Length: 68
Image 1 (cartoon, rainbow, N blue to C red):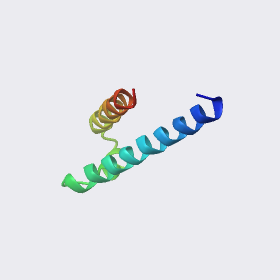
Image 2: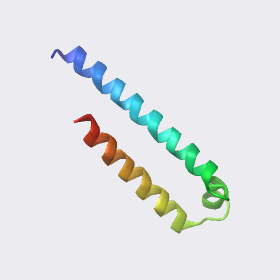
Image 3: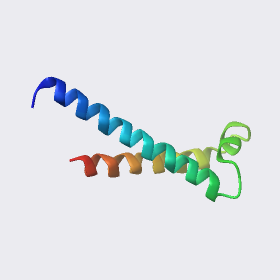
Image 4: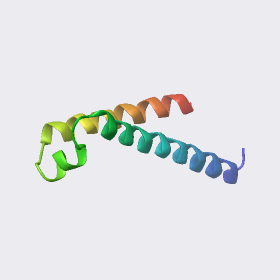
């Protein structure tokens, strides 16, 4: 595999991962009864931010293992 092919595959997987991440965030915003963005930014809900961060980290691990 040439260096250019490696760069292309990295960009493709990064875009796929970013797309899955955005879809997940939109789904979380729709499914919950409250606005996640408002709770974290305006009300300063640190616990919700930690939960959201753990969801992001676990999603990243799942996508990473699926790529390999």
